[in-house]
Image 1 (tube, protein in one colour):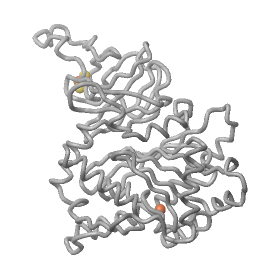
Image 2 (cartoon, rainbow, N blue to C red):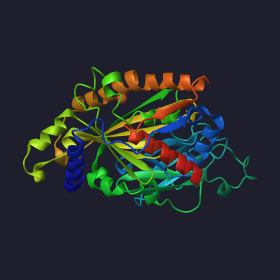
Image 3 (cartoon, protein in one colour):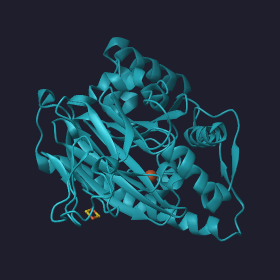
Image 4 (tube, protein in one colour):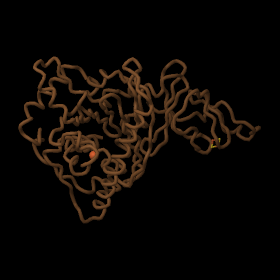
Length: 382
Ligand code: FES
Ligand SMILES: [Fe+2]
């Protein structure tokens, strides 16, 4: 984030320093429990948001070299994205054309061809079927050229990779980033290095996972020992890039900046958790000295797979030990996994009970209001 923007945000904070909580949204918003629990609504989200819109998959640096690949699920469809020899990315439905077995899992490198683990049908990295070993003439009435992998749209920009399962034409990455690229471009994400990704599944709607990151109001109550000693809770800087909220959590040390007489010495990033939502499925977070990524895969209306990744800065910015990064990731997964997400599971159970018809997003939760307004608008537009 450029220095001018950091100063602009700090000035906004300074202006509101005296009134807490701040800044407020113009109005509170009521949301219906069904937004989280209704099966028909979930099916619409799966189709309109997760299959027809571009979804964030990972950083370009996850797929730096030819043969590097990443898998993901988009709207419950498994996909694989792969770096070709010419440097371009390709994407396919991760299902063999024989009997639909997945071809690869997780992430990997040096892939020269896809070989199905079930009966060894083999595909080029461009998705063409190139071999059906040990079959003699048994498949001669099913021409090879009719058995290419199903291709999907993939695009990358500013070090971020997006894929879209359905729909015509190439992905316009501006549709996915919604203007947040004006800031995201400045981090040089293509040079960050993947450290580790962890996966967990939770019994709650996917939106409850994202809700966790939209407000700091809960910090002193849900995180009294872990986060509250270090982070403010009455202040969160919230903005909206199109449909993508950006929420900034602030360490208590942020107010030290105002002691510096000259604004050109002010810096926000050393005190901030800057969270860029890439609606619908992810947030990319600049966290003090590294990047974190949260990505959700809805598995059902009340079940969500959550990926947490940590990316280290390019070595030119100084090298820290693996232990240091692992401790960072441990803390992140531990606090969310023992304090935030179990609460979200309990909330989902309450909402699904039928006895709690609605929830309230208060004016002190503008990030939450923005996120749900965006999701509802994208669904309505689709
Ligand atoms: S399912 Fe892939 S070769 Fe049979
Ligand atoms: Fe939290």
